[in-house]
Length: 355
Image (cartoon, rainbow, N blue to C red):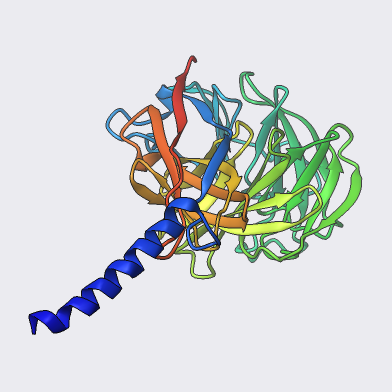
C-alpha cells in the first residue's frame, strides 16, 4: 500500500510545482489579480454636526417627509406643506409654513424634493395625486429666498401644461437649467426649465424608465444626477444615477427596507431622507485593471455594494452607518473564483468638515 501510493504523491507534487510556476510567473491567464490604480473621489468632507451624537452617518429625527437639500453647511427640509432651514446642528433657523401662498389661480398642496443653489430654494409643486379634490392637477415651479426670515417666495411659474407631474421634485443642473422629475405621469422623462425665467427648455428622455421617483439632485463634479425611487409597495428604496444625456444606470443602492424620499447629491456625498432621518452614503469609482465581472470592493474587510462597468472600472458605495466614525477606509478588490485574486489596498477617507 505504501509503495503504490508513491506514484500518486509524485504526480500530485508535479502538478503543484507546475501550477505554482504558472501562478508565480504569470504565464497565460490562470492568475491575473486585480490592480487598483486610483479611487475617485478619494475623500469626502462632511460636517460632523450632521450626525447623531450616538450614531455615525444618521441625522437626528427631522420632519422631511418629501425631501432634503444642503449647501454643505445648512440643511433644508421639505415637508408636504412646509420648508424648514436649519443650521448644521439641525437647529431651525427659518421656516415657510405657507409655501403655496402667492401662487394665485392654482390649487396646490404638495411640495416635492427641492434643491438649493446660489442662495435660492427651488422646488416643484403639485396638487397631490392622492387629493381627490385636485381636479385639474395643477403644477408649478417655485423659487424661495434661502437664509431669509420666512423663506419668502420670490418667483413662480405655472407648468400644468408640461408632461411632468412635478410631484417628485427637481434638480438644478448645468447651464442654469432646472430638471423636473415625474412620479406618475412620465417616468421616462425629465422636463427642463430655465432657472431664471422658469420658461420651458424642452425635455430629456431617460434610457430606462424610473418608476415612483421621490427625488432628484445634481452633482457638478460627477456631471450626473442621483435619483431616488421606491418600489410599488413603498417598502424598498432605490438610488439610480442619470447622465446629462439621460443614460440611466443602477439601481446602485437599495438603502434599506423602507420608503426613501428626496435626496441631495450637490456636495458629492448623498444624503437621503428615510424613516424621518437623513442618512449618508459615499459613492466612488475604482479605476484599475484586471477587474472581472462579479468583482467585489471591500472596505475595512466588509464587502461593499459593487457595480462592474468594465475591466478597468468599478463603482461602489460606502454607507456611513457601516463606519465607526471619521477616518480612512481600506479599500481592496477581490475577483471571483478560486484563482480570482486580491488587489493592492488603497485608502478612502471621510473627514469632518469645518462648519
